[in-house]
Amino acid sequence: MSSSNALFRKLDQIFPLTSEEKALLDRVCGRTLSFEANEHLVLDGDRPTDCNLLIEGMTCRNHVTAGGKRQIFSFHIPGDIFDAQSFLLQKMDHTVTALTACTVALIPHSKMVEITERYPRIARAIWKDTLVDAAIFREWMMNIGRRDASQRLAHLMCELYVRHDVVGLAEGWSISWSITQQDLGDATGLSSVHVNRTLMEIRGAGLITLTKTRLDIHDWARLKEIGEFDPDYLHLRTNDGARGGLPLSQRMY
Amino acid sequence: MSSSNALFRKLDQIFPLTSEEKALLDRVCGRTLSFEANEHLVLDGDRPTDCNLLIEGMTCRNHVTAGGKRQIFSFHIPGDIFDAQSFLLQKMDHTVTALTACTVALIPHSKMVEITERYPRIARAIWKDTLVDAAIFREWMMNIGRRDASQRLAHLMCELYVRHDVVGLAEGWSISWSITQQDLGDATGLSSVHVNRTLMEIRGAGLITLTKTRLDIHDWARLKEIGEFDPDYLHLRTNDGARGGLPLSQRMY
DNA sequence: CGGTTCGTTGATCTATCTCAATTAATGTGG
DNA sequence: CCACATTAATTGAGATAGATCAACGAACCG
Image (cartoon, rainbow over all chains, first blue to last red; front, side, top):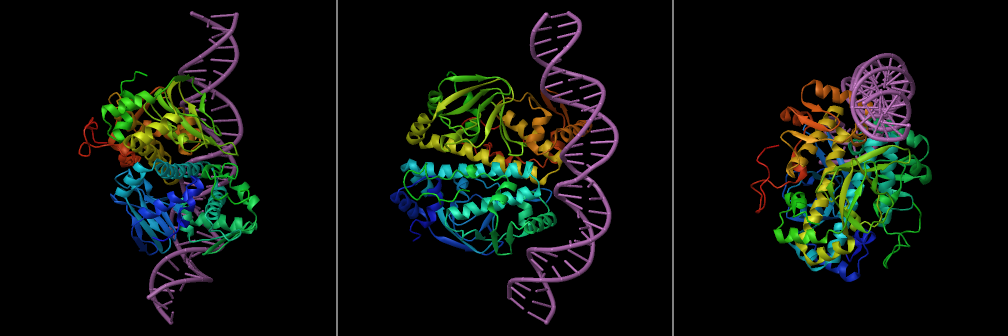
């Protein structure tokens, strides 16, 4: 791997790491694998031997009920270690699917044991990362359980925008988009038809432009208001909290 | 504390601990606190200095939206460390509320740092515990997003039963109950009125008896079927997986 | 260029919500 | 130990957000 730390920008946003620590992390990343869109990277029931760091592309965690209904639990962008939990939870209880072609770096569980035993700060960083994942799950529960369709979609778009921006993947108020309306429904507990209609409404209000490949946000303030979006749950470093390292983008979400 | 390890039965179900390790954990538990029903043990926005181990009573994690709607993220029973995440996530992003009078043991964050740095196995045990919490969140998302009212309630009752049974708190097919129908609604994303009607249906089918203080399950097989309940997501040790320690109750969920 | 996937739109249906009132249970002060 | 206050459960009636079914159009893909 020669990512030169760029890939740990997300981890670093959550838990400030020294450059030596980033170098150490870089070293435990083993071979990389590539997948095509719609391939499953990890399957429900698997007993993986490695964790995955997403290098390029987009994935989602999901699970299908006995009754055949699908729920998406989270979306992942480059820099996310999307199955750190497989290191401690032997058996996968969900599937990870590629939304686009993508590349991952494998981190063998054995290396995870090694590095987390020797470097407690790195252990805490990765642990914290899994805790932020859990916080995001809670927020999604709130979204699905207690918000209406436009709130759910607005909230999700806000989250995705901030997460992209924080790791330098936003371009102005725009991010690349590779989520179908069906997937959007599976993520928000709505039908794809209703997602479509609600999206039309949000578009109609002039808040966003959304194509198959790109999301442009025209009115952040209102989008955020509609979605009741408050980025606290992402537990990002703020400038005042920063213990060295990159300050969080000046923009107030 | 003189819990003599009984309190770590849950942790032990997830990650088998030696008795020395349990003794170590016992030693980091500091003073205990008592709360009355409906008091908040930890508040959204707090920056706690201790983690809480629930000794007696029942609590729930919850959060109220800007719009005043409440979502419950999880219920906790004795043996649960319900805010281990506060150790790494400085600021609370949700509230923990007592459903009954309850007692907790405080574990100072400083002790958490100490013990997790010195004993990597203990660190992994607690980390794994937080990962199981996250798995439960995912399952709840599935519940709220993709199941209908009776499925949601059946699933929740199955989960609560198994979690009680595993730590020895079930009596036959019966567990103590202290969840109001309003809370049940906040946990499942339903209105309390609809919870009531759905409960009447489930009762009518003879599957359960539910009073204010007790849940009796009369037909586990059907309840489980209705709720599409599969206990894998709880990541409990099974007999074949056990590396010493107590075997999981012989009963097949 | 034909097939497949995804988005769009209409029409209808229904699970669940909201509002409102009643009853049952629980707790409290006198 | 009773009368009243409070909280929770129950039931009815009516409203609605969102689901389902079905068809069509647009984009993309080999």
